[in-house]
Length: 226
Image (cartoon, rainbow, N blue to C red; front, side, top):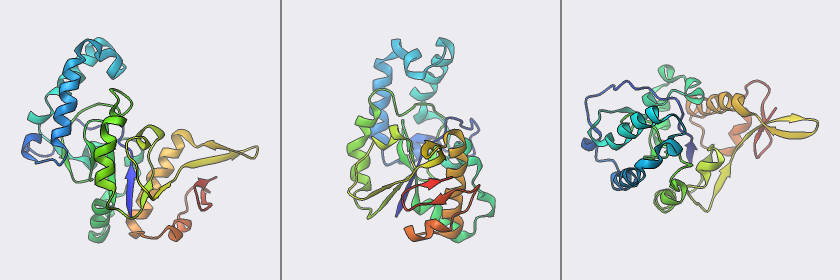
């Protein structure tokens, strides 16, 4: 069972190693180089790509174009968003740490897919630009093909970046007037808590999802609903 989780918009700019990305033998380094070439060819469109001012876009573009010469941190140290703030990393047992790195995969617009302990430099590139879902799909689908079951906790745009024969897509909803509504920002908190629950308990069976308890969300066999 492999669990796919999203990256975070927020990222730490701190580098916890002096190892540069070109020294890591990253499995998708060839694909990253292709994306960098695409970015170079779109230098006149960077405001649209990054969705911010021209000055900020120039800084982000420079950062992305130079990723191979920049120092790294583990992915789990790099991402700092709401989901990641829920993870009780300091209290994971050795068994949970092993489970976390073996079973969790983080999707990324620039790097495709990484393990929590994969070394990556600081960057910013969303999956919904430059046709990246279509670009990554054949590579990520091939990488995931050997897995028997995929637990998909990704946003919709990231779900377009791969295909698999056995996917369990899980979302978080609140019930309002008998209608299910996306839990939105709070759903990220619950998602982080769920990932933490999976890791602390080294969960390997879908039946055990019903044991997850947080803020009145309950498992209905398909999704978590409050």
